[in-house]
Image (cartoon, rainbow, N blue to C red; front, side):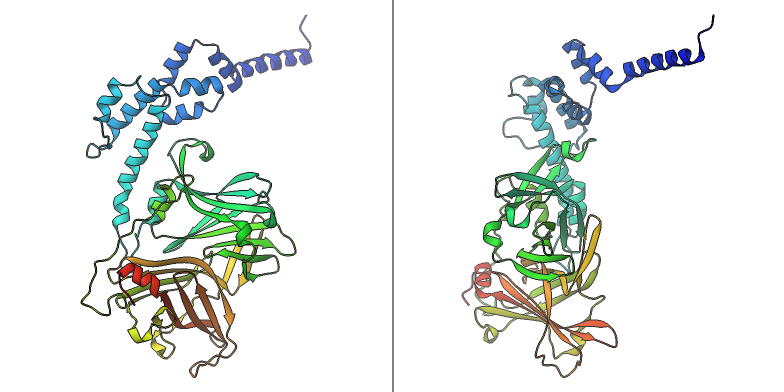
Length: 466
């Protein structure tokens, strides 16, 4: 007698379910765990670095097997053979190939795995280092900074600590590259209350090019900034606001967007100048930042104006979407008689020379976006400034948000529109820009740009005594 159709269907479904269970990842894992360790090691020996590193995150037994020194010694030797024969890793003792083959078992646990990733990282850095030598004649900075950062798999992390001691690390939400700087954003509801933040830490993170999710990839962290919020919160300057957020400038290059009428953080923004950005992002340690080498120009005691002339300025005003205005100004200088109040004045655009005035391509505002909300803070933008000395070496580099205010008593006989001022200041100098709004053209015009550098910075750089 034939079984009813309903019973037959259930029996088929049961057999199908059992076959599926046998072929499921969990069943496969249980099956592999029952294999002898020698058999498992033989299977793992056929995996590459990416697969071996990924499988080490399955569970503790697989972590121990996948970190076997003999496996990583074999991978290390194979990787050395693939590398360019013209490049050899530096070793103070003896050639690494010979050492790897003869001393595989005489090293501490995890040695060959660490050495493999360190060698691959050094090889990649050496391969891309030549690209940093391609200098732009306009900016004096490497032309391919963005390309090198991307190919070295560099990103940035923000670590936030609150007053209770809780610490949380946030992955980068998004970034925007400009000609001479990059703007980094962190946003999301997991950011703590503004008043409860104790410290902010910015780390550059270089991850290995493995086929696994970013948080799982091995990487090196380089401390780039550490802020004591308790000291900065009281003196934070509000540089702009719209109907949703208020922008608080903690220090040059760092702002926090706080929801208005609240104290919760909408986003955190860092502006990083390209000057030695690759080195700062990857060559520091997790607790100490990269220290820039001091390279002084040759001393000239013949020229009494040495240190006062031959400067070159490149400046960009932009927002988080587009460039507003940019310009390069060669051969700007200062005379001894113009030194005043400990500042050396370098005029790039003179208010009285109409041919130097530059129209802006758009209005000045700072666009922001946070999850489902977005807005625009008027009269705010980002300034990226690079001042080169007479040897075309970066002398003063700035990347920071700036704000624009209306000038109350303007002095101008050439423009009838409303006049505005942009003023920036830090320990090394100041920047003053004057703009006028042309109502008929619906356009801003930059009519004055003056950079002031402290005499102390010039004396220290050029070994002078002004």
